[in-house]
Length: 166
Image 1 (cartoon, rainbow, N blue to C red):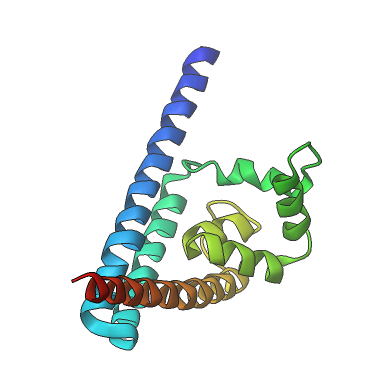
Image 2 (cartoon, rainbow, N blue to C red):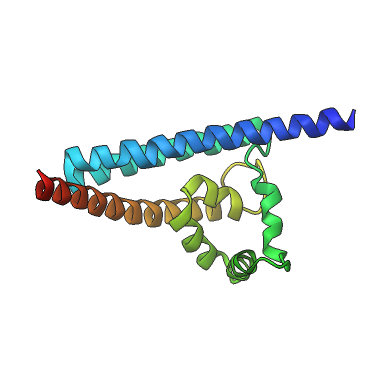
């Protein structure tokens, strides 16, 4: 029976992580730059920020509805007390222990608002309270602002290289 539970958990994590990776990859590396290229920095950024907001809200609601840690985030919260040999993990643990504001900024630059919120909220599968909404919107603004600029400069650089070559 224990083997079945462990195997089931592994399948759940693999499915959740793969599904999230596919969604994030298609959204962040294909759709986002394409919309920025077609609509420009401001209009494209506004469209993609709105789509990001809606996508992350749907994922949060699905995560809460499912009542399952299909990304392993609840488990990863233990990283805050990491003291092992990995320098990167110790640095991340140190950063995450410095408070929610710094953790929100760091996580928002690497992950989407959905992941940031799930990691930083106090209660699992509990919906969003006022603090959670603040974290969500701060992460959304930081992450989208950073990614709009990154996509814009990436698209601009590709255009410049194409003009140079052709």
